[in-house]
Amino acid sequence: RLPGFAANPETIPWVLNHSGIGPVTAESIRKRRKSISLYLSTSVMLLGLDFDDIDVVVMVRPFNFCHYLVQAAGRGGRKMENGVRKRVLFYLLYNNHDISRNVPGLSQAVREFCQTDSCLKDFLMKVFGFSTVDKPKPEWCCSNCLGLSS
Image (cartoon, rainbow, N blue to C red):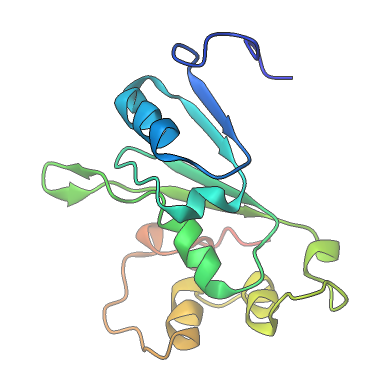
């Protein structure tokens, strides 16, 4: 249970959202976003609440298609500091059951993305029909390039 669950939604420092966001709710969140320290959401977050100050995005279990992974990761990474885009951490948490062959609707590309030891950026670029031109420094690329994959 989250603390303050019954508290006034205008003052609590987190948002729990598991349904569509109407214009009134979206405006309320935008107005107080500097005071929100945690936003828990289902895939509804993909529908466009754009915050420029998200530092960490965590996805529990992958969505069925790579474009949803990219969209979820894109919820962060919009903040600029001194003319430089701020680094955002994107975590994809899953287990082998979440990416097994009998998971209905899970694309082969997502399964391969979760299992690759190669550069995740290169992998996604190829999925979308592009090639990597400029390779960032490992610390700005992905966990595989940094040697953190497990």
